[in-house]
Image (cartoon, rainbow, N blue to C red; front, side, top):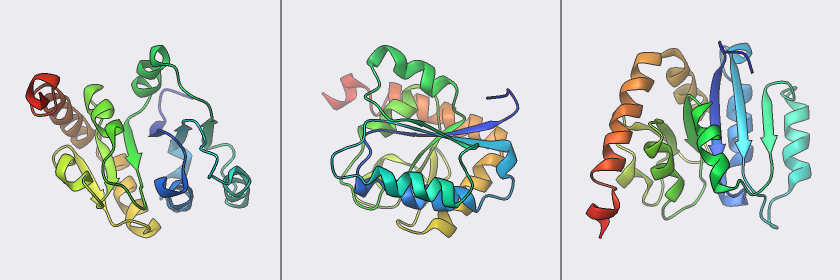
Length: 175
């Protein structure tokens, strides 16, 4: 990856409920696709159809823009994956919560997440990230484009997310 590219990260177990197909569809609609890479990092569950994912990437001619790291990511490698990203995306179709959001915050990364389950309780829309309608590639693409175009906002959101990880979502606060 070149130093000028924006890197969007999807991090976590790959399961049908995580909306990876919606993410790839949305990614294909970005205005400045040549400026962006998508990293999909995580272990595929037995319920995910990887052939469908590969076919979708190929069908959208995105093989040169999407990096797949389809394995369990050891804890010692997690910081390097988050450090290369500009922001993190959670396009879930269903969920009650996601611990990965707090991981993103701990690395000072803003998030784009579906307005579903408990995610709106941890993603402060416009402050620590942005919320999108679930299963809506158009809305997701619009919010991704907005994040791509606004480096200062990404930095402010990431700093606020980091603050949340050290206060509201710290182990002391949770305990």
